[in-house]
Structure formats: C-alpha cells, structure tokens
Image 1 (cartoon, rainbow, N blue to C red):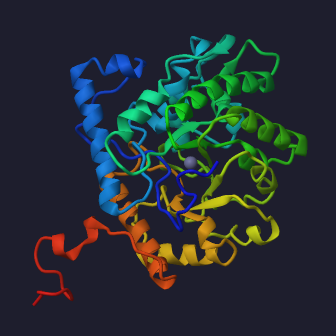
Image 2: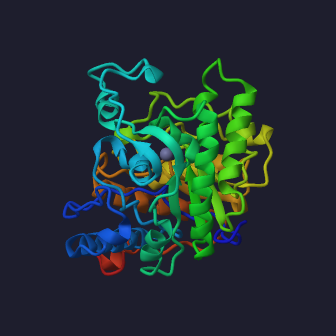
Image 3: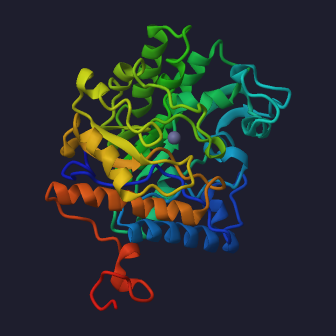
Amino acid sequence: MLKVTRNMVLPTTITGSYPKPNWYTQGLHGRPFKVALGDSLFREQYLDAVATIINEQAMAGLDIVTDGDARFDLAVGGKSWFFYVLERLGGLSGRRDLSPGWSGDFWIRPGHILWEVQEAYQPPVVVDKVTRGPLEYTSIWKAAQRMTEKPVKFGTISAQCLVRMMWNQSYPSDKELILDLCDVMNEELRELAQAGCPLIQIEEPRHHFVALREETTDKDLQFFTEAFNREVKGVEAEIWVHTCWGNPSQQRLFWEPPSYERALPYLLELDTDVITFECASSGGKDLPLFRKYQTKKKIAIGVVSHTNTVIEPPEVVANVIRKALEDIPPERLILSTDCGFGREGLSRRIAFYKCIALVQGANLIRRELKLPEAPIRAADPRLAFGQVPGTPGAA
Ligand SMILES: [Zn+2]
C-alpha cells in the first residue's frame, strides 16, 4: 500500500547502492550483521559510512534516501548483491566453479569484463530445502532509519533473481526452488514491514530479461509474476519493484538498452505500488508505452545513468522528465536513477554529483509546474567557497 509517496508529487530518490567511502575497509565477510556490530572497528566504519551516505543524499536534496547497501562486501562485480543472502541461507553448501564458462550467457568471452565477473561469482550448491538465515534486514533498516527523519528505502534482490546464482541439486526444477525461496524471503520482508520499514524495494524480477528470448512462453512470464506476488504477499509496506538492464561492474548487459514492451503487461500485474524503469540510458524511448498499457501504479523512472561517468546536465534530466509527463501525471511519477551506483564501479564523488544533478533537473520541472523546489545545500551559492558569478555580493 502507498505509505511514503502517497501525497508526494515528483519525489526523488536513488535505486540503492552507493560507492563505499575509501576508508570503509571492513566488511561482514559472512558474519551476521549484529555479530559484526560487536567488532568495534566494523561497527564504527559501518555506522559512519551509513551516516555519510545518508548525509550526502540529504545535501543533494533527495526526498527518499537509502543506506547505500552498505552491508555488502567490496566484491568483484557487485557480487554481494547476491551473496549477502546466499552466504546466510540454510540448505546451501559448497560451490560450483563457473570459471570454465557459463553456458547461460554464451556471448560472454574471455577479454570481456563480464567474463571476470562470472569467474568471481562461484554459486553455492543447493543441497537441501532452503531455509531462513540471519539476514537481519530489520536491524539493518533500523540502524539507518535512526540517522534521519527522511524515509529510508530498504532494497533487496528478488527470490527469482537470486536463484540464477544457485546451483540447484536438490529441487526437481528451478520453479520449485523459486517458490520455496519466495516463502523464505516473504517471512523476512513481513518482519521488516512489521518493524516499521515504510518502503521496501524488491529488485530485478526476471520478466524483462527472459521476455527478450524467443523461447520464453507467456506461461513462463506468468509464473514469474505469480512467484513475485507470493514473495510480497501480506508485506505491509509500500512496495516498489526495481527493473534495469544490468549492473555488474556498472555494466549494462546490452550496448543499446532493449525494450520493455513484451514484459510490460506482466510487470504491471505485480502486487507493487511502484515500478521502476531504466530510462536515462535510453532517453526514455519506452515511455510512450504507457499510452498503450494503462496502470494506476506509480512509475519511477531513471533520469541519471549508473553506467556513464559523465554527470548529466540538469536540463538533460529535465528533458527525460518532460517526456515522461506526456503520458504519466506528476502525481504518479517518481524520479530515480537507472540502477544503483555500485560499490567499486563509479567513484563516490561521481555518485554524489549525479544525485545533485537529479534534484536540480527535478527542480527545473517543479518550477515549471509551480511545485515547491527542494533545497540543495550542496549547490547553494551562499555556502560555496569564494564568490559565485551572478549571485548577490559577487563582483
Ligand atoms: Zn538495477
């Protein structure tokens, strides 16, 4: 149900992850979160990093913040997005060495950065029924939420995406494994919502990727919708679903962003309040689809890219928003990033300035629509060193 964004018009946020500060050298490395907080060096670095990441988002004027996924270890290709969960679930043991190559992504060859990512992934083997482990999402969200009055969005990988990184030797097929894992994650998410987390984002259902393959049937797409809805059933929070075209090592999996069209009707059937779409990288080419496929859900669009290091000028951000407003009313439009900023792929400084550009672009549109603009302390000339040309007091 809508909670956080119910009365917000054009709110701004980021997808989730934020580059690690250089001094944040500790990591969980498989430990449960609350156990690691008993290690004074980890505790100080983790809590200071989350405070820093939230403060940078506040300086940029974002309305909804995240903890930057600071629980994730610094691992090759954002591996922790999968492995934070995999290292803690029951029913998994050992690993399958994917170094010889992964037939699922046949186009990846040595010499491609994703080959190295694939070498690093090493999926665990499913040897028994999957069971809950110490994910401790509730404590992780609380640790961040007590640092700010702004709502903290908590994001997690979807069960159906997580199964891509498991070597199934226990279930008759991946479908049974996905359904069991949906139940495991559902318990964790219900607990998180009951503890007061107002906004939960489930990341990467499989629809938009599998819909690109000819052999995918409508029944397959329907299955992923049913699985997703099982995962979020009874979770009493505002639910977002995040979709993008990939982010291992800040890489989109396609040079040209594909179209969401075949997946869109199925994505719109997900039991979520908000759906996010990658739009900055494509210039919003799929946005006119919302003329054809009607929905009452709120739509979050990416207006800055996670795969391009050049900071988008505010006018470029505003142009994507204007395009979206042709088919989505401002009350139903949310402004975000195409995907997370990662931990090692972009620098923290670039991520910070992308946050600022996002809000500056949003403010251009808010001004046109006579909506209140968000203060951006990081861009306030009165707080800049020296005299800023064209401002009061400047020579
Ligand atoms: Zn993403």
